[in-house]
Image (cartoon, rainbow, N blue to C red):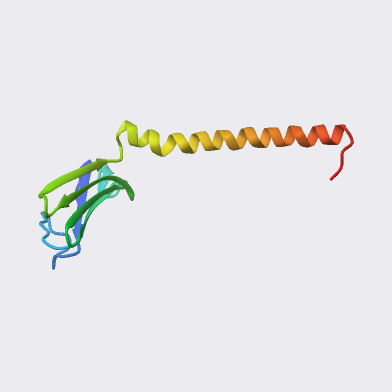
Length: 131
């Protein structure tokens, strides 16, 4: 933060001669990004959030991706032939359930399996069975 503002936004676009220009428009494939600092002054500021947008231009489709702290948050795909745009939001409740529910379920199943295996090994030891 070069001035005493509580919020400071740095923008960057690699397609410009001045990559740190205040406003950006992009016609070709590019990555445009911003980092946000918060605090009370230039000497008392901290990284808060980073976000960037990418555009991938294919033969028939153009795909836009939006990232927050390097986590994909949203995509949109423009079909050049049909002239339609389809967006996918990865922060929707359904998407979050799909992403994390399986992970949590698998972790719980692994814990239960480990507990069963420990108990089984203990029973074998108590009953005098050997490998």
